[in-house]
Amino acid sequence: MTTSAATIGSTMITSVSKGKLWTARIMGGLVIAFMLMDSIFKLIPNDTVTAGTVELGYQAHHIPVMGVLGLISILLFAFPRTQFLGAILLTGYFGGAIATHLRLDNPLFSHILFPVYLALLAWGSLYLKNENLRRLIAGKK
Image (cartoon, rainbow, N blue to C red):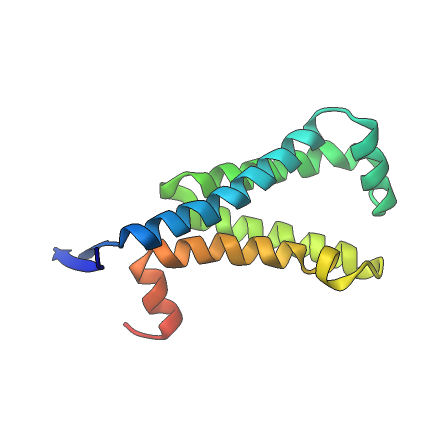
């Protein structure tokens, strides 16, 4: 199945191939699964999470706030109507994680760039599903 487009009024409606759609769903699903786990673990008091977060330089009372921010971002990303807002908020969240690991001189590929991998999966899933985003990135009108 290939991509086809139809225009209704000023709105362009496209259908994406099954392969692209399922690839996008899997990519987005991985991000959603990881971030849901991360957020939920931050909302449930746990010695392991507290120790790890304190080791990163945060105080224990910051953990629930980070959990709520991550949960709101990922829930917005999970719903099609708000997925772009969710992706933007997740990008900011990931930027904070990158800065935290960079400040501590953690290993590059396993710690510092891990949020980049998640951001690439999140934005890549939107790129595959949305013709307007593909055209915007390509610089077309």
